[in-house]
Image (tube, rainbow, N blue to C red; front, side, top):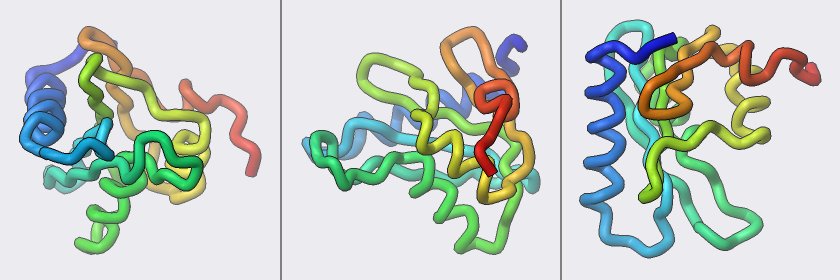
Length: 122
């Protein structure tokens, strides 16, 4: 599906967050819009560490701590541009039962979570 103006603004917010952080350990920023229209952010913790935490679960934790449980749209952004969630994050997004959000996968396209993870393990 093509991106909306709201999607493009979300991408810009993730890009702005990554650009303003002055920390070499942060390589990804995530921005999401909840079903209530609020925007939440997260950044990854540790770039080259096997125990690193991706930006998507940090953004989800931010949303959940504010009492919300459903994501409308999500994007992850790195210096090279938009990135799709890793396999671990795809499973986590599914298992947290946050709905079937739109995931922005490049500058022109978004897809539903269940299309990225058509056969979840649980």
